[in-house]
Length: 68
Image (cartoon, rainbow, N blue to C red; front, side, top):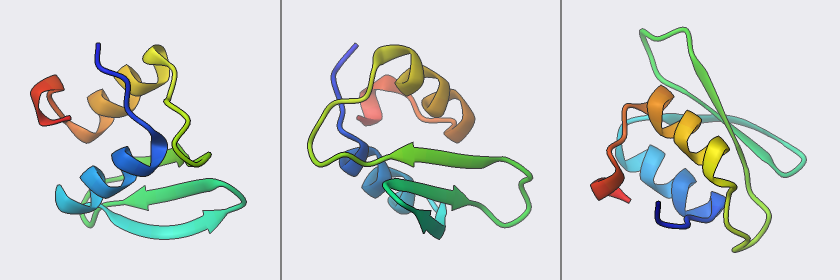
């Protein structure tokens, strides 16, 4: 799996239609109208997200690995 930073994932979510609801410290919280899920992305500069967390967030956002 390709390494992706929180900053990069946040920009991909925005392009995919997710809206930034709020920022709590270094955590960016995204939501989408009509969906109950909230996606919380830790943004720590360009530090890559751990693979398990990245997989989980991709599953929630319905992102494919080739979209990264």
